[in-house]
Structure formats: C-alpha cells, structure tokens
Length: 235
Image (cartoon, rainbow, N blue to C red; front, side, top):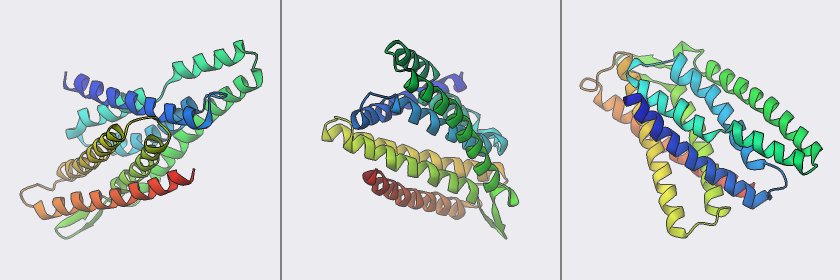
C-alpha cells in the first residue's frame, strides 16, 4: 500500500511537470510539430536510464517507496507513449507524412539513445569505489550528488520554461518555483542520508557528516539550478 501511495504521489507530480513543460514548448515553438511530447519523452528516457543505475542497481533497501515514486510514478507520468501515438496519427491524417515519419524516427531512436546515455553515465559515476569516497570516520556519496546536480540543472531549465513561456500569473509561477526547488532539495538530500545509513553510517554517530552532506548537496543544487536558469534564458 505504501508503494501505491508513493507511485500515486510521484505520478501526480510527473503529470503536472509534463503538462507545464510541453505546454511551454508548444507556446514557444508552435504546434506545427509535436515538440513538447518529443522533448519530455527524450528527457524522461535519459532520466530513467540514469536513475535506474543510481536508484536500483545501487539500491538501498530502505528506499523502495522512494524509488517507486520516482521511477514508476514521476517518470512514468512525465513521459507519454499514447500522446506520441495520437500526435503521429494526427500528422498522418493531415497529410504531413514527412513530419509523421520524422516524429517516429526521432522519438524511437532519440529515446533509445537517451536511455543508453543515461545508463552509461550512471555506470561511469559508480565505477570508481561504488560511487563513494571514504576516509576514516566519513564518506561522500559523490556519484549520487552528481546525479542530484544533473536533476537540478534540468529543473533550472524547466523553471525557465515555466517563468517565460507558460501563461501563468506571477503568484502561480513563484509558488511552483518554490515548491519545485524546495521539494527537490529536500528529497535529494534525504536520499543521500538514507544511502549512507544503508551503508553503515548511523545518524546518531555521524550527525555532522550527514548534515554537512545534506547542506552541501543543497548548496550545490541551488548553484546548478541557477546555472540552468541562465542556460534556459539563452534557449
């Protein structure tokens, strides 16, 4: 039951983010081609490849619901095969056979390539010492922290789309930004702590270490989100 709730919560967030991203892209680039669906599917494919390595193959048994919420719920709802199929059929009915064929090829090849790149990145990150730098009395899960910064960079770009491309009031945009960033910083830091606990570090004995990693992860992610905002403004 806990996993069902986790999937439901992750799915609701993923569906909302997909709607905002795809709507922003359509307002920006127009609806002559299914840009929104293509982009969310490629991004989602990259993320599921990267996070499958980070959250499953490097799994911590304490976080089953956490992984279900992200991989099954959020990414499952963020990507959409049914919308891709419908939009492709509409292009065929409109006589845009070249666009339809292009959408099929780019979507299939692009998504497969994105999954492969994601898996390759994840395996590379965890290749050295299992993704952890250890010393006497402490450790830094550098691989997961890098994964968190990749997600933060994407959030920065998505936030730019929300702020500049989607017709929302200032209040809604500010609220979405605060909720999105705050939730991400909290959950990404929490997973690092749970990862360390699973690897034998107790919160009572290593409080300073865990708080330092939590704060360091938050600061690095905030910096990368800011960089993502700058990059998004140039797109």
